[in-house]
Length: 479
Image 1 (spheres, rainbow, N blue to C red):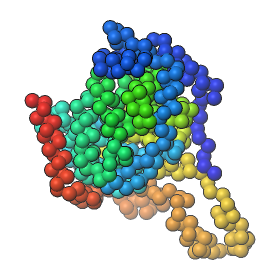
Image 2 (cartoon, rainbow, N blue to C red):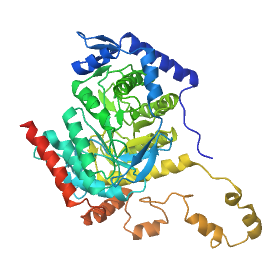
Image 3 (cartoon, rainbow, N blue to C red):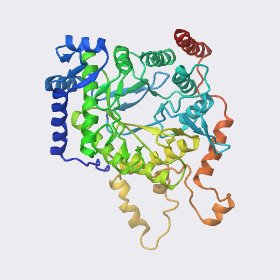
């Protein structure tokens, strides 16, 4: 059987958080500086204070929004082929997104990210078994127009991989251009089939920026799913208690859900969370802490209670090095995110509180993800796997397991995780191979990937020109 889903909340505790959320949304509500959305919500019958920019959501509005949101949706690759379902409680893993710095594979030094880093990142992701979607890993710093940096990242991913994409911004115009890039490259119908997901975030506590609301109103008619990902910080923009932190996230997420469903009932949506705690000794925001991992489990429980597809961030680490702390924070955060049943888990390849990426980290995180998913899959127990007849046939002190058909069959199955970077075997063998640690092994693999300079599935030149024209048009409008 599969591993039972991890839980940190009882049914009663889930309901307490839900009821508190409804009280918050109907009582103090949320604030927004965006007249078009305020006017729209007022026309829909919500309690809106136009002067103060305050919107209150009744219980009925939230319940109607929950009832109209799909519990699952299909996802397709760039070529229009079905690849998986989001919402089936089987975790899909995404690489990236939105860091600034890159660890250079040759020098080991942290430097500003470049477009070429994103291109290689996407080509590597294309070949990694446990990477199901690609977030834009960094905002490349070598582009001619800084305000278009995300667009160059999106184009680099689209041109170098067929896997579905994930992007986020706080600007309506940038978000619109990202969708146009996806539409230009996608072989299917973007309005009906999911190839790209847009993530938008409220600003804690209980506030929506105008640019984000522009993006919501623009995105909903396109059919592109929205992941609403609040990022409250415990003790800074939310209560210091974990229950208070989860409740703040829940209130902001459900307010976003309500707006989206009022704009278009049945719009595809992801209940998202990226919990951040605060180290009060240093005033540092933390994404890899033990407490954020507890919240990843709680967030999945709330999404399951609402019957919504859900997204969280992992594997996360706050350390700036590829070391033991990086490994334990990433392994715990990713395993708990998977074992709790989060549908989409984003952040492979990132560390340093999400500010830095490396190709080596991507490879290490993919192996962590493979192990986490294998543990969550559990054990298959039936007559064939128990193999009682084989045990009796070979008998006490018998030989033959190594070469029997049963072993050969299961050797080629998913019964065991295939090692990617992990060191195994005797010390003599390890030393003969150069006594390399996993980071050094990852560096060697990155060099092998880098030697292949062309994507495995190149776009037609006509589509590449169209992508370039979209970016040029965006930059021209900025002048």
